[in-house]
Image (cartoon, rainbow over all chains, first blue to last red; front, top):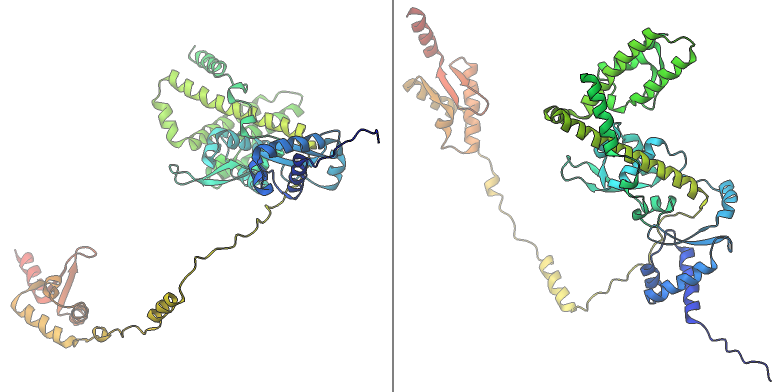
Length: 200
Length: 250
């Protein structure tokens, strides 16, 4: 009778965490907190808290399933430890054998999108038709209306699949263009040097 | 080493350099599709296989590849080439530098993506089509059956019969116009068809035109029209003969 009395109250947040967990299992794409809250018929802030609980349970090293924040939402994936086993079982068609041309086109669409094929051609100096077709087929880019000016050319933008494959929470996670190597001054100096040599 | 026999294996073309040039010159291959840098690489690889530097081959290659490059540049920037030409040399260099920098940045971005792909390559997840959301049951507002009956009654009433009287076409006889045109031509040597039939109905005009063709077939008149849809001028053939005779005698 002297044993300490422990009340095990049903923790409602714990219950919500189970619901969130279930929703994430049946979802085929990342779900936002708002979407989870709507399906769970609960408060978004409480869903955020519940996601914290779920994330604690499903994290790298602790579980074979890992909760990640990707492409603007929450989704389950396999743990990195299981990558080799997964690789033996399934292929990754979205990113298999992405050519240099396709990657450059993808970069242009990710940074400048929505943009048209002529935009890509102008920057790369090579026609982008096959690269664009390949990216469309892989689901990494999709059509996003037509350009009002350039003769109504189709515009493209990256998809949530792109963000998911590259493990980005959103496009804002891409490095800033200014931080990427190209130094206009340096290139200009080199051009000027060449020009001077020619006139000399 | 013969430059023109250089074997190429590009995305858009596979075969000897010579054939590539021929196809480009015949406009059967769009230069925009060709990665010129890949051609240079192929040449350099072949060059590296040989011990002695083949200066003749290098010279020939340089001439060909630079011509190809210029063609491609012109093709890529048809309007901008003119724009650049108008710029001062310094401004042109600035513009060129800006474009090169833009491409370099995108190359860097592509490299970043490739790196990212390698780092994130061991993340496996399930991808599928979006699940079907539960269907929303449409909620209808309550309605009065009497209103439905009233609406049905309107629809069930046969519409008033449409009169087809105006559809009956009456073709006046062609002979009527034959006579008419002959009498006009007795009074005047030439007339304007459009003016002559302006007052008539469409059907009558069509029959009148048939009469014209009939007269033309018989050689009684000459038909002249300066341009499509221009006024049709009709003249007596004997008048024309008189005219030409007068001119010749003058």
